[in-house]
Length: 287
Ligand SMILES: NC(=O)c1ccc[n+]([C@@H]2O[C@H](COP(=O)([O-])OP(=O)(O)OC[C@H]3O[C@@H](n4cnc5c(N)ncnc54)[C@H](OP(=O)(O)O)[C@@H]3O)[C@@H](O)[C@H]2O)c1
Image (cartoon, rainbow, N blue to C red):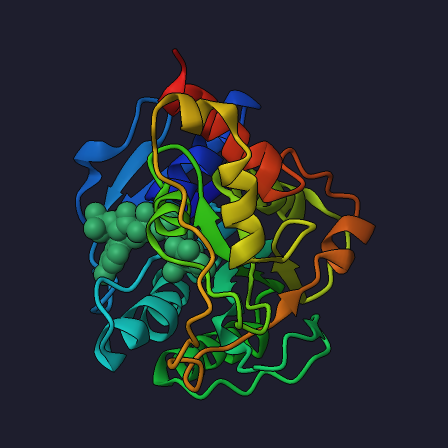
């Protein structure tokens, strides 16, 4: 297949290399293409404005769109999730009929705060403007003429993206917190799931991309505390405190389910944060 990855950064490069290793022809679109590795053909373009004729390669079979917003304002989210896909679709050659367009979205579309399970059928009613832009982009591609699939990812972690581990080590998990769940996915499973959805026959229009275990932040901190490599390095693991968390009003709290993705045949390489974090810690703190 000839596949364009628009927004070919952290996940996109991993996906691109995976697809290229299987013999697919992969094009990576971004503004700064110097970071693209050999094996991915460069397409230098800025998706905030309509693309000049001839920017995109011809005869594409599929597009995976995953530009990230460069900032937190509404304008950035509009560019990443609404203008970006629209500009890609408009720039395709008129005779280029895509077999699939995948839009990477986010579990940020769910505003739920009660810690219950959410899946593809749950109401997506974000309180944030960014969440509403995500939904607008989803509707744009799902309502368009191309066969589209949306994958809503949880927090991405992996090599070089260890913020979740560092936060867990830095922040004091609070004893009186109601369990506040975090939902995540390893970079390699993002790439693996996207590859799976590209090749899947008759996919559903919508999937959640998260691992098997939404975990309260405290459970993550406790697991880290039990790791011998951290104590060997004298890294301080935060103790529980009885302080109340005063900032719960704005936060969502939900457990995202990957049941549909798993039922479609995808097998996770890192089923929970334990396997994923262990690999990262082994690399970072190996004696
Ligand atoms: N981080 C998370 O935890 C998380 C959670 C849920 C969903 N997501 C979504 O998952 C997707 C993949 O994330 P990621 O971590 O791989 O993102 P990333 O590393 O930031 O890659 C996105 C790429 O988009 C390109 N880009 C941004 N604006 C562009 C523009 N105007 N025109 C052309 N290219 C543009 C950037 O390259 P240039 O700067 O060179 O243009 C960047 O390499 C994104 O859609 C993100 O929003 C992320």
